[in-house]
Length: 59
Image (cartoon, rainbow, N blue to C red; front, side, top):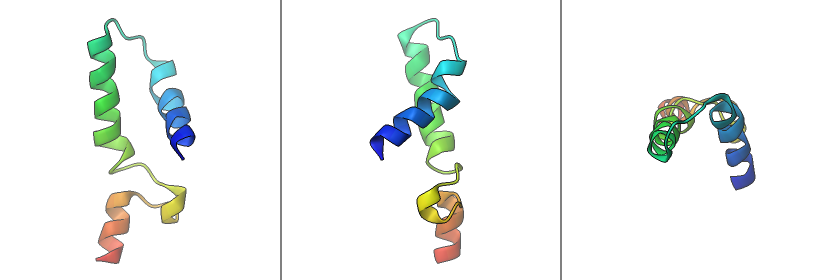
């Protein structure tokens, strides 16, 4: 699963972006993980719904 995450991170963010500094890269990756990947992105393990939607449906 970790390999899949890093492949997704690279293909959706890193390979499409030119970072001027390491700090810019860290900020962009943090925003991607906290703002999109974890709460919004649909996951196959959750029957293709986002974690937020999954929690709403379960609760």
